[in-house]
Image (cartoon, rainbow, N blue to C red; front, side, top):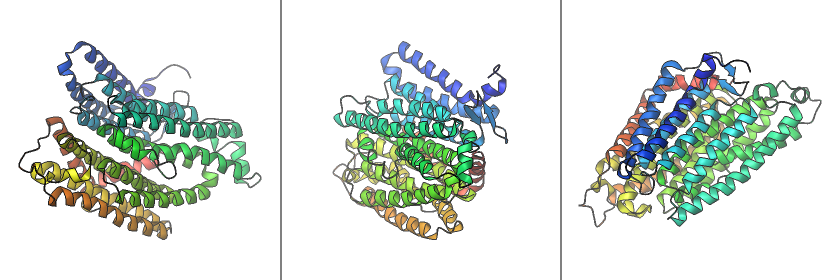
Amino acid sequence: MGSITSTMILAILPEILLLVLAMLVLILDLVVKPEWRRNLAWVTASGILIIMGVSVAIARPPMQADYLWGGMVRWDWAGFVFGQLVMFGAAMTALFGMDVDGLGDRGEFYILLLASTIGMTFLASSADLIMVYLSLETVAIPLYVLAGFLLLSDRSVEAGFKYLVFGAMSSAFMLYGFTLLYGFTGTTNLYEIVSSEYMQSIASDTVSKWPLIGILVLILVGFSFKVSAVPMHFWAPDVYEGAPTPIAGFLSTASKAVGFLILMRVFLIAFPVISQQWGALLAAISVATMTLGNMLALAQKNIKRMLAYSSIAHAGYALIGVATLTGLGLIATVYYLIGYLASNLAAFGAVSAYSKIVGSDEIKDFSGMSRRSPGLALIMLVAFLSLSGMPPFAGFIGKFLVFAAAVQAQLIWLAVVGVLNSIIGLYYYLVVLKVVYLYRSDEDEKPARMSAPVMFSLVILVVGIIVIGTFISPWFNWSYLAAAGLF
């Protein structure tokens, strides 16, 4: 590999700084008084935002992607954009967790959150199957612990255990697929697989495609779990309901976003010779994911379970862009994930804040929310309307782009299914908003106050939802750079 150069350091500068931040949090957790430990949320969030600023200032990748650290890391705009995205999600999650009992005053929470974020940023830049797997496990293991972090809650412990069991199972399928892919091609580098003798034989129709399709299906099991797409979606409702609400929000946004990136990177780069087959497969999974997620969300009485099924449905929408196999489709998926991260984090943040006040996650207990906390109700309104795809919010532009990409690719039927599912989604979001704004409770006259960190993070997210939905050009340009960086 040779000597370490400044370029190599710049390529992993965010990860280095995140590790330094995690060590700082660990030291502070050991030396500060217990009553001060909640302020570790501010240390974590501000540290991450500073790291994001430093990365934008001095660690932006070149327009021509570079392979570093023995070809394990690809320094490109796809990894950079998604790295910024997951770091922002981690910063907001740290602030949301500050006031959660049993979470905000535990230094381990912030350290595990940073550890998982380091795994996500490495995953976003992975250019080798070994690096992909190691990064995925670095993401997953801290999240298993965080999902079951509240040891006095049976539901939290159950969530952590289920997430661990199903995650290990899907990881085994994916690793077996990676092993077979290496065996057939003789390389683990994603960008060298396509030029292997085996892939060239398939391209020239001298070898059957079916073994490669089987390998792709095994790998897809792992990626489907990561993005909670059908048929690997079944873990999400129980885990989201039982996990601490800020962790559920982080799982449904940052983890899902980087899961989509690595799915796109692996499939587009390693499997172009069977792109028509996996494109059709992803289109079918998209329809099943959208429809099942939305239909099951209709019947939910618990708001976290409703948001879990909603998150499954949104994975289906994002898959539309990937299934088109077009440049616009990839740009649309990236844009969709940016808007979705801001919208869903705001939704989970608002739920976390109000459920702490009323002591319940049941939708009926959100009655009178608009009278007790008008600001929080307005934030939930903006987040839910964005998730449903209403203008002028981020979700509208994201859905418009993925549906336009489907139409451009002559997949008009897929766009129609997506629009019909969006209408179903709008219904259950409006049901919750009806409870929030029209129903009354016995405690309407008691103000429900939010803490400063929660209000700060929610305001940032709401502003982001509006800006992403109205000032389209800069976000579209970033999405374009990320999509182009995959190749």
